Image (cartoon, rainbow, N blue to C red; front, side, top):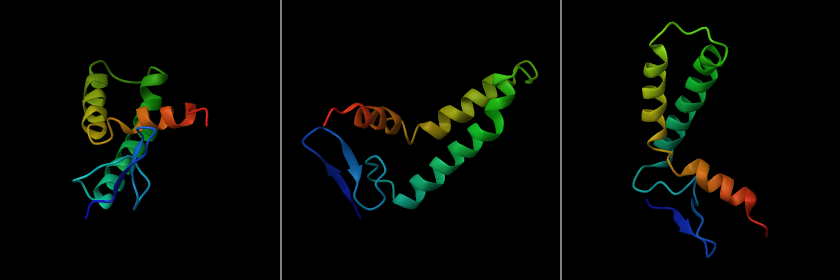
Length: 87
């Protein structure tokens, strides 16, 4: 079922889970991929930030993040815009 809502301020979100609008993907799938993205970044990002990665592994990590963020492409952009909204 589609729970997407669009406000007059151009922000769109899911009424059911309050995440960014994600139709036709169901809320459970969005939650699953957001959790995977969070865990991937939490577990693997420190290695790259502190220079512990063997050469070449960063591209593999980058590919993983790109795949995980394909579902949430606009989520962070809309989140930042919502936080910057002066109202």
